Image (cartoon, rainbow, N blue to C red):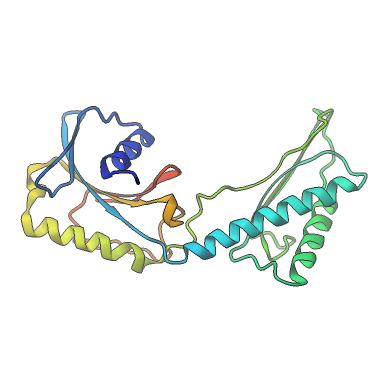
Length: 243
């Protein structure tokens, strides 16, 4: 059995540091919930969102895991210094056919060429962002750290809290729908603040919608004071706040 709406909102509140002991679910909604916090009565509307390219995101992260594991094994076979590596690989990552071998070799060769020298404090570090001209096109972030006297390194990638570039058409319609409902019933007048929480669940492979879509343009007529995306169990981001 999946999580209930109350489970989602309780997790959301905990993540942003607000106690949920005064959270009350409204039987005859809207709103779905109300919360008394710092002498403010807040309405909270809950709605689910689904990122349609979730399967592509899943494939991307599985491919990233495979390349990272193979790269670490290939690096360790050589007589190289112990390093820790943190990297992000661009979406979507294609490892079909000969492309896997090409990407693997290019990644390992690049890492070897950028191993930092140790400073006087026994630490060496280099970092490359996506805008770096020297970074291979399939890498969007790379950090290499070297410590004197450390026997084992750690190779990792950023975990699955990436948005997969959720599109405005996946975010705007549920906001408009909830906003129109609010305007129709005018319940917002009974509250100090009115919040909307767009919940994305892991089981739908849509838990990556944690950032504002590109070209996100809030409607000035939205009545909500705050709008959040809550990738349940992963992260929360505020994507709108009324000025």
